[in-house]
Amino acid sequence: MNLRKATHLVSSLLLAVGLGVFSDLAEAQNSRAKKPSASARRSGTHSKKSSKRYELRERGQKAPTPDRISEIQQALAKDGSYTGNPNGKWDDSTVEAMKKFQEAHGLNPTGKLDARSLQQLGLGSAIAGVARPLPSNTTSKLTPPSTQAGQHRN
Image 1 (cartoon, rainbow, N blue to C red):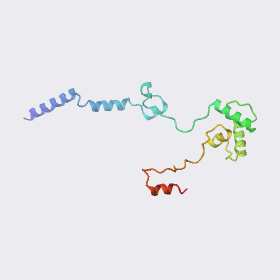
Image 2: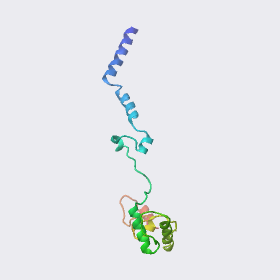
Image 3: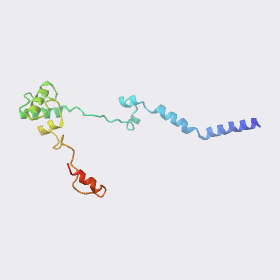
Image 4: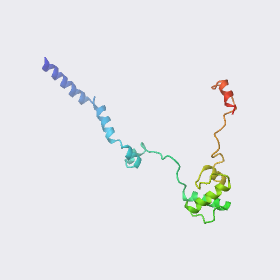
C-alpha cells in the first residue's frame, strides 16, 4: 500500500508541474531577477524597455538655465545692481548684484535666487512667496456650521 501511495504522490507532483501549477512561483522568482535594483534605477543603467516603468522624477529645485540667468542679469542691470554684461553664468558678480538688489528691496540679502527676489525683479509669479489662500467665505453642506464659523475668525 505504501508503494501505491508514494507512486500516486509522485505522479500527482509530476502532473502538477506539467500543468504549470508551480509556474506562478517560478515566474515570481524570474520577475525579481529581471527587475533592476534600486541603485540601477537611480543611476539610469536599466534597460530602455523598463525605463518608462521605473522612471524616477528628480526632486528639489533645478538650477536655472543660462538663458534664465541672462534674463535675471538683465533685470538686475536694469535696476542698477549689476554692472557687467549678461553672460548666463551665476558668478560672483551676479551673486553680489543679487545681494545688493535684495538689500535695497528689503529682502534677506543671501545672493541666492528665491521667489520673492524674482517677484521683485518682475520675473516671478505674482503670488510667489505669499501666504496660503484664505478659507472660502461660502458655506458648504459638507462642513458643519460650527467649523465654518471657526475658520473665519482669523
